[in-house]
Length: 207
Image 1 (cartoon, rainbow, N blue to C red):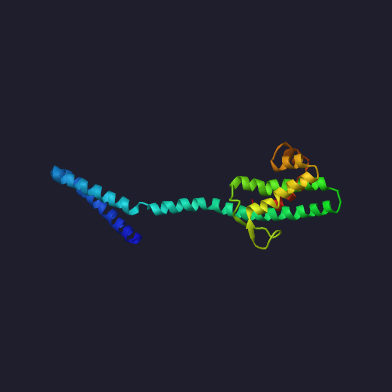
Image 2: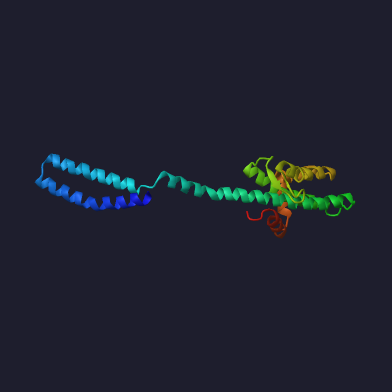
């Protein structure tokens, strides 16, 4: 159908010069009714040419959808990366729990601060940005080989960080990091650039 319209449009384009020639010669040799008739014919031909070559609304909609697609891809990729970040945080948090249970207090404070900082950047920031459905499925291998809900993943990462911070009497500081309050920026300013880059590489992959 599109090819037929194009062929017809080309045919009309070829007839347009002849109609214009007839119009200009008619203004000299013919009367007013004939001239008006030529004008109407020219107007009809121009209109039909416009209709033949005018882009369809479907093409316009298709272009708009194509333009929006990268945003959807970014959101999907960030959701996969969210699962990766939660998995990393849970693994690091498990190491801190093991040290705490064993009575090893060495570097516990710095460890809980770092894992809270990573959770803020890799988990909380993403959830705040996209406002995902907390009942949606997500894969966290550190918890289960099968999909679990995002709410369960959040409870086993961010909420467990808060629980451990209370046990270590570091609740205010850790809350400040997770809520991105003043202590978040104070702690970040004390971190070497190499450490920040390492954390970003772990939890902000492909963002």
